[in-house]
Length: 193
Image (cartoon, rainbow, N blue to C red; front, top):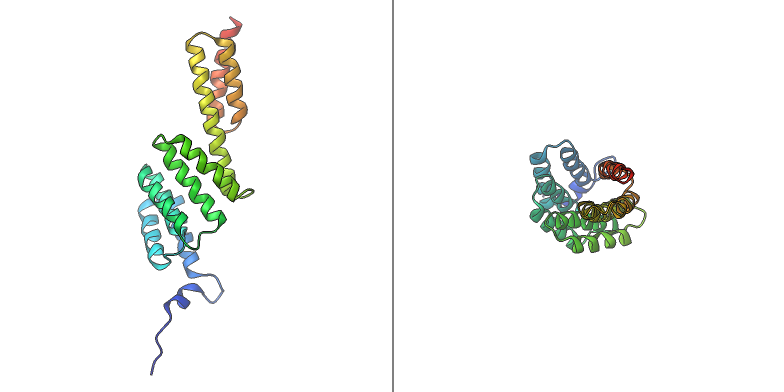
């Protein structure tokens, strides 16, 4: 009599020892990074059915939802990832960063910042913590930039310049920094006249 095949064993290891489900997850992230969102969604949905306790599929689906500008769906998937039994510190931290990004997009900034701080606590030196720190710096910088614009409109150029400088110090790199640098230069020019 033939013994039934244990599907979990077949899916867990290949001959080289790498889990097949891990390869499936990597394929989903490959499609995601290539911009093939429908293919990525399909792979992550399959992974969710095959490995329901693993947060990788929900993390991938949250990223697909954000790429499709659907923060509500991204928030749901990130929350589901946090509930998975196999969620480890780094996976939970990444889910928190995605949850924060989704909440930030719908205007729940304070909640988003709480999740970012929690992600940093969970993954202190890891990539999720680095992403969380960047998001927090960008948020602080944009808050200061908003205050600087208010001072500019009131013709309080010295205070505006101080706020622009603080905004630049909060987030010295990237596209936000170049926008701030342009406004800071314009404010300097205004002060000099």
